[in-house]
Image (cartoon, rainbow, N blue to C red):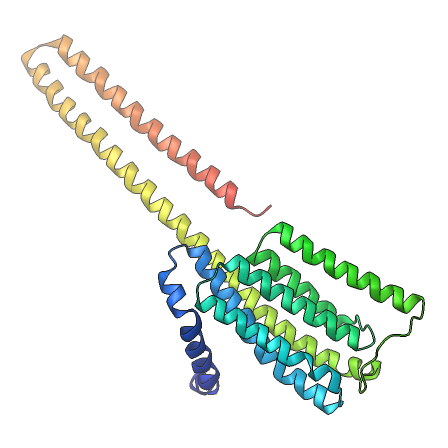
Length: 288
């Protein structure tokens, strides 16, 4: 079964890898910050799989002869390609993320408005995904701004529906058609979320584990270095104490034993401090 699965996904996988190398290959190689590295991959995946999602949407639009909806797809495709071009030119991820999230949000708004202000679950999924993507790639103020824009549109749609304002309705659109395509569209977006957002979260978790492991290795190396120094001193003092004992010099022997005790206390304190530090780090990383 494994070879068949590998063969089945060979062409899409090669297509993805080829486009990824062409668009963000250089940016990934030149980016030293791991978080920025994963943000670039997140934006690319978001754009790449959104472009793939256009295919079934165009099919449904053609099937129901919703010609007005077709006007929006070239705009959306052009903005996605612009986002990929910005990634290739190594524009800041916050700028690209803002453009991409704004594009997907506004595209869904325009589509909703042209389709008789449809605010069904299909559009809701796209809007929530856009807001989440904006938060992951930009910052809180930008996310709140886009959220306010979305709430403003929903308020407008509610006003039109409540007051029965006559507005544009695209030919070929009907609520029955919307309900008919909703399960398929939502299933595709669920797969989209798992692949794009889920993969990004998994990458961040792997990054955190690597950073934690690296810190632990550095800390362990420092402990080994300090303990080695302590035990070398103890070894030297024990030899000196043995010599003084054989010579009958009890005062110097007592001084050696006192110093050995101090070095042992220092080593114990170092180990206890290390244990407390590891506990604090684990508490910081524990989910709340």
